[in-house]
Length: 317
Image (cartoon, one colour):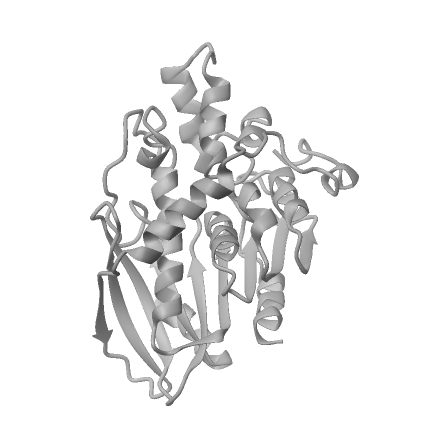
């Protein structure tokens, strides 16, 4: 809630409220090895638009659990390679429209924009493990094993799309970028952590970070409402609180942050009532690479044209 998180002085030193699992890096290296060793089942269907400067495609990808995933892909029509920007949307939305995404063509960058599974786009949901399934998919499967949770599959999907972005024939490997808003910001950080081929990473009001802080400060509503209802319905005395937050820590963008080698741009609105500013600062403070933090005192979890301007400069400089 506005004004109830932390002072800016404290935010600049805050690094999170729950420890990273000792096997976090090994866990995700195993997942990445599985992705990299498996063949990619990919289909690209051209979309007719009267724009001589770009080519448009619907992309279909089959995830390891046989869930059908969808993305939009636009690339410059000229011969030769171009930059490629992988961009993830906020929760629980969908990839932006062709008109919005075509802006990347103006900076000679292709763009790959996935729809996150089970949300507002055309990607299927797949199956998850046991647990409540109300209030959106984010915390589905918490009663099951880590690999059965929705969040695990969401992060794994992101890494799979990162592999796709790199293998597209138009991609210049020296100009590979990843970015995202909210949920997408957390996924972008994970992709940059696991694939050092990404040269730049931008996260606008990132989510999927510091779940314990979300809980402690009563931000467990809006996108995080499923966490509140998990405890209300499945652990009302909070006897399993440590177990649940340890499970969530494997899908916490904060724990990916120290692994990032790319140049990073992060933005935070101090009036954000969806993703606690403290959680976003924890992510930024854990980054050990070249980084910049745009802080907007009177902005919240919203479109920010001022940050959009900074993002443009970040991608083209």
